[in-house]
Length: 122
Image (cartoon, helix red, strand yellow):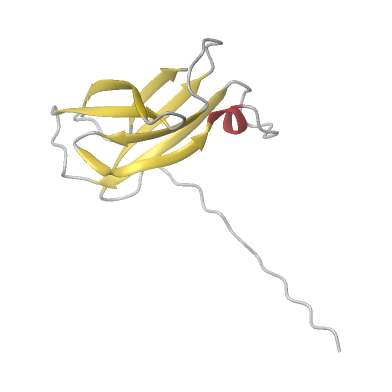
């Protein structure tokens, strides 16, 4: 007797309209300079909110026809209220190849609803 098991995985895209969430959308763009290949990105003031171990080569040059080559976008999602409106915060990118900080960017939490946006050229 053969048993067949099938799994169905449904991925629901995250939207910035998640009630009670503060979202930073980070877009990495390949600038053809010698930047890091593997990165993590986090909120410096709240480092537990991060996206870890992103392989930028695979992420930027995958076969997804909906994303342009040389770009990859990810989101850091954390509870709202940790960073007040008009308060500054920092988004840091770590080069996972050697553990060094590639760059940190000062941003301000806009009072408007919706995600904050950052573009990083690597």
